[in-house]
Image (cartoon, rainbow, N blue to C red; front, side, top):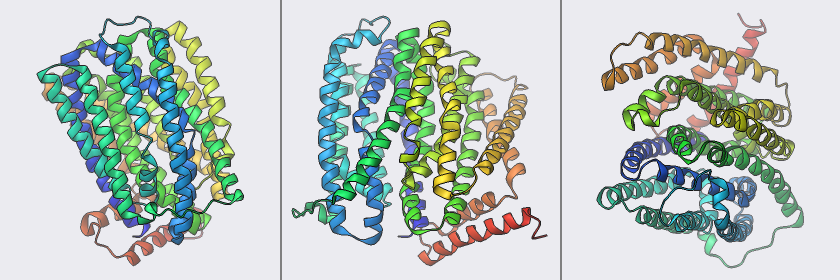
Length: 536
């Protein structure tokens, strides 16, 4: 299966699954709030944050070995695949045990992370069930990684979202019938175990070599290269966990558990959007890896420009919708008691946009295996974030913690990620990236102001007023983006690709896919020549 065909299939499955995921998540959250209340919501968000910190034990092992799988998968080297998978299996067993041990050892210290411990029965047992769910997810994860590295992410997507949908339906039923939070968590444990077992069996059927006992040891040079990437990724993992995983913990410390619950509602919406974006990105990461070992720098840059433009369009549109619709949505969904003020919403949306845009070069850099060259960036970012969060959180509370995240992003990954990608991946100047970034963001701000102005004229309230706001938010930003970018190479390529997906689906021949990639490169060259005055 060619790269483009694999990418299209992965994206279609991912978007369909994420739509179902988002719908059932919103319904489940509404039932959760109505049945259990804000304190249980806060505990749920806090323990999820603690477990995200414990995921630090993974230390980037999976990412390093998955990158190492791209070449043997492209070349059909079964022996090398078996050797790498054996190493990954051992690593994940150790990681799973470490998460369980570390998680349980934190049980006596939970009071440190909560400004006021809520009066919730069995709170320690609840925490241990979260730990068990997190730990068991590692024991079969290595087989999932092989499926994804082989550009078949749609398979794991299908299993994950099917199980998640069934889980949420069952949890909704349990809450409505009994309101029993412990049974709610038991269902979560059962779903996690079932998903891992099913994916493991599917991997065995797809790759019979996984069942073979004769496995050669990796050479020392190969292990050294993997451990070098693990070291770089472990530092990146530290940064991601500290900057994102500590958010809930710091909010609980400086603002209280109820604020964590309120924030988790906004985060649920953000997570749903990020889920869509991450599914798209994960669907093409393996293709980027294959591109990196087979194509020229010029072609890699041309593909990145399209990828970056597509992600900007989604992020810009989503950011405008979030800023305008966040509070009206939550008001209709859960009630006015669960709202933040406009300034808090603004900072949340800015962080969403900045994190999304910085992720574009980061994901592409990861697909090319360029882990080593920005290894210290996450450590510096974490130090800046923690220092700013402790200082600003003590002064401004929840707002200060969120602003600290903005400061940390702008001070580090905003410029480091594209610099490393362009210098080490494309071997060219990064100035064009920042020029594009400035143009994209400026157009986004203009589109946001126009949309906000149009929405301000709405006088109808309730559900009908919200529907009108949604229609304006759908039309206005996209109309501005279309007017600004309709003549660019990236827009024309994406338009042709989407039309091809609609008209031909997944039945196109592989030779057409390869021609399409070459067309992108030719269009990029013509556009550069036109800009330089060589073509009129």
